Length: 236
Image (cartoon, rainbow, N blue to C red; front, side, top):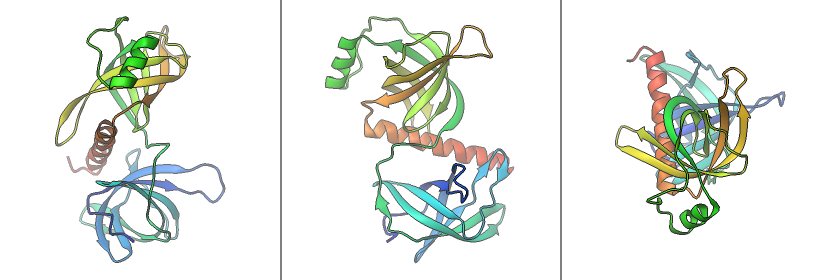
């Protein structure tokens, strides 16, 4: 059942609340696998360890080299190894391959260039998947406020129309590589920032994104989250 998983796989944990008041989403990492039990790092949020209760029901997503897998797990034990708090999960459903529609979002703050695209540019990029050598519109500066494997939230001084297509360009770095990410996006929402004059918040969904680019973004998110967790534990 667990033969598709490996030590080091990133985990996204969706805590299913009993009162239907919404779910909490955390990230973790596989530390060990023995039989039908998975040892993982206890998640941290806001500088505090999240002490998931024994018996908690968790909707769990495993990010592997073969894709994303989903299983329902129970939190069956907690422990501390050195300065690392751990939890033991037991899969109580089949581990099945899963195509994500939603992704964990990481709060961030880094620059992005944004261009509004004309319809012929959208069609050409969709057809060739090649970045145009020239664009009809000038680039606008912005800041990525949060990022996920499905899209970004951006702050910018430029207003973009809802349902319009834009081209995003930003730099990401993981432990293994640096990459200039260039991706076609669709503006899902554009709202005026009430706290800062003449600025807007965009919600952007990736469109026509290559699998390796999405995987690179997800790897960056998990590495950054683990770096934050190590820092909060006093490990850096």
